[in-house]
Image 1: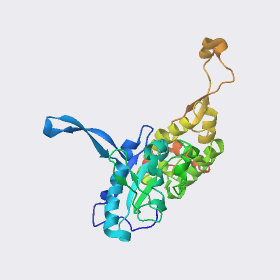
Image 2: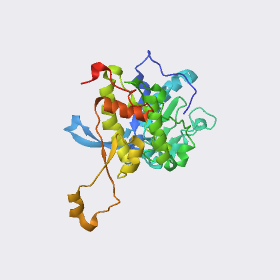
Image 3: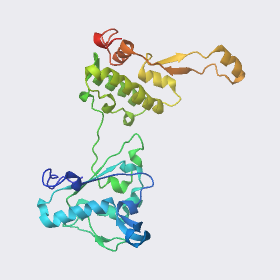
Image 4: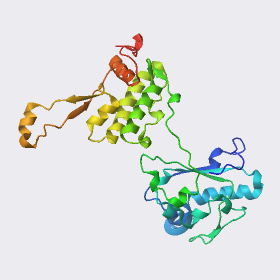
Length: 302
């Protein structure tokens, strides 16, 4: 990511004019990112379909940035292209020969400036120096090791790990400690890339925070961990604690019905849906609170 140039203006023009956002996916291609031939309906000719060269998101933001750069030089405002899930697309197919142009010294006006002829429009194209490209990726979804090496060399990587210090204390439970302990267990059983982000535990305040926290716990945190530890109740229980995951016995009728197919060593686990102070106490135990210290205020009980 480039650090030179001026910040994006806030008053002189709408900020959206300086920003483009795109999400990569497996079918995302060069034609969508740079340029491609697209069918367009000609309303003036009874809806007749014609095929034109249409600029993609990368070429559009480059054109805006270049106009500003040629008009203002080094004083030109910076433009930004945000690429979410940058590791989900085939970078070689999306960027093609343009991957070289995003290097700092290959941009317009730089010492080793390079321009290319685009395949569809046949226009000369280069990347202006006042364009910042910001990519985001989640290494838990797909290993960063699978990221195209040519792309890795052209980006600076900044790791953003969970920040428990941003979390509140709800009903006596220090959510920062709870998240830290939860992530320590996840990292020990899986790896550090699968740790849960702090946003999963961000609640409004202590008055409404309990219900919000309980909803997030049962509808976001636990389903995520169930995916991490799919069909492995023992490890899920080790992470969440015995209060939230209990081992249940298989009914004798089920054992009899299964006969020789039943594995006597198999264990069955279920999620325990706790309410009120029981929920707070269990979460407090995860955060290292002695029994009874974490509880709901009196006006929230009942």
